[in-house]
Image (cartoon, rainbow, N blue to C red; front, top):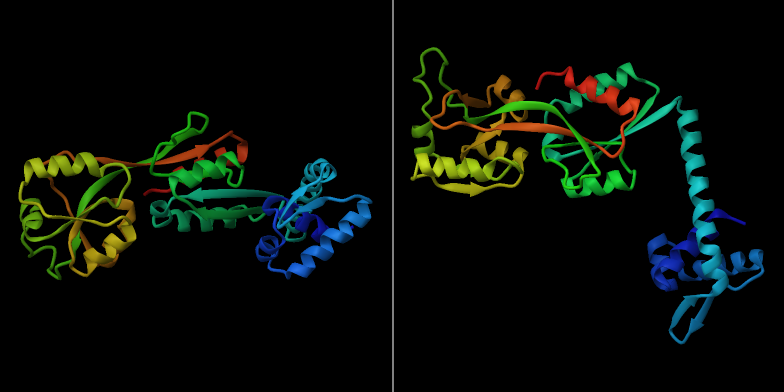
Length: 292
């Protein structure tokens, strides 16, 4: 019996259509037929029954399906374990991160973590919050890093970082010592305000800003990395977490406006887990050592 026969059978049981099965597996439709016939011969039974243009699983097919899935899953687990062994890994850590966090210090911190833990195989998945919860429940990831709180009470969470949100503008090319001070009101009067690039703080912040500065004109941009590009190109200004613009501030592409007439929010980074283990806790503690 070949494992490809089992894979074909499981896929065919899902679609109940040989053409769709062939498309899903990137093989020809005759190959699907051959795989099923070989498996039926090995099992000495019929797995599918055709009814006109449709097909269904026989009682024997329904009986065998969970065992086929179990056999294939065990085989894949074995392949993964063997791959870890041959590459020198003794454990694995699968991390889900939101697009915003992927654009902060995480790459640097992760590089150093992997250098200090060479026997841990690390996988990174960039996910939105809804996808991250699903991935945790399905055990596709061990830990999630998000700007949001989880929706499900079954997901445990912990604050990793809290940081300031500041008004960010394009660098004006002037010397810091001789240039006039940056004034929030003047900047917002002369520039479009880019909003909604963070999932948490914009609703209240927009209300506070419109109350203080009724003249503000806004433009929604859903991603921070696009917002930064727009700011650098002179398209507008925005209130952003400092960790997301630290490199651009250091390189002189952007400027931080230090003062505000309103109370600016803080942005938080949360670690999500479905169940805690020592490796996840160690990774969280490691991340907390890095300054945003």
